[in-house]
Image (cartoon, rainbow, N blue to C red; front, side):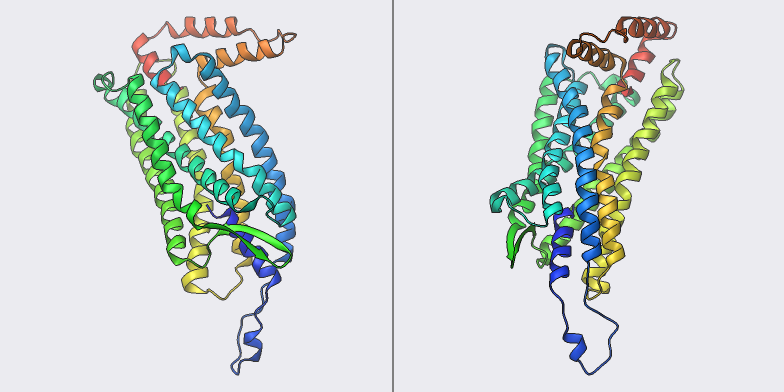
Length: 359
């Protein structure tokens, strides 16, 4: 995650020029970096996109948390994972208003502790969200492919222990973000970023973000769902086609939203560190800003992908919305669920129950 680093890089390079090459005896192709246009673009683009992501993300994930808390007496392992996934996204979204303000005025006004704290929340929310998606994938794999082994471990106690372990792991992975983040005074502005000169942090950040945050989760999804889809297709369930479509959408959303950013991040790390450290890489910086911002929209899709496609969850959501908007009687949850349940009774109940784990 390099959002703060990108802003610091832009701020630094837009105000500090290196003219040493102009006075050297040998000709050079390098020239001072001027990222003013890129900064002006970021001042408009980042706050706008961050604001949209925050509004949609808080509404969707907040509704998921409210529903799961309201129906906590009927909590299952899947509900525990959904709650933690939504809460992870909320922790991640909490940081975006601060970074939106920072990118808009080019000045960090919240102090050193908040700089470190926001960086930790940013990383913790991201990694915990990814880890809970991996857990839900593994849970679906065991329930569908190895159904006879599922009952022994899918308990509420196991869900609580697993959730606490994932949060501790996420916090441990994110702790370097707290250590290496700092506020730096640069003439007339203050910047909040990680220590860009520390090679240990740069290597750690790129490895953890790309390997732990993308490659391993993506491999788990591909392997597990490649086993789940054939099993679903062999079931006599009216829901199997819908479940397969959801799986394809789930993996595709994760891949197309996060892979472009991670590729750009890795290329920027290589070029700025090893290949051509003296170049400006303006186009690559622009790609980083755009791909990173669109990757953040994944936390807005999580409630739709993992929660609102389920009939039981949708029924509860509609009931809650009808209570919040008493005059709205156009949505009949009773008709929706009754017709759906009557339709599903045509096929095997066990097959429908397993397919419901997906949707």
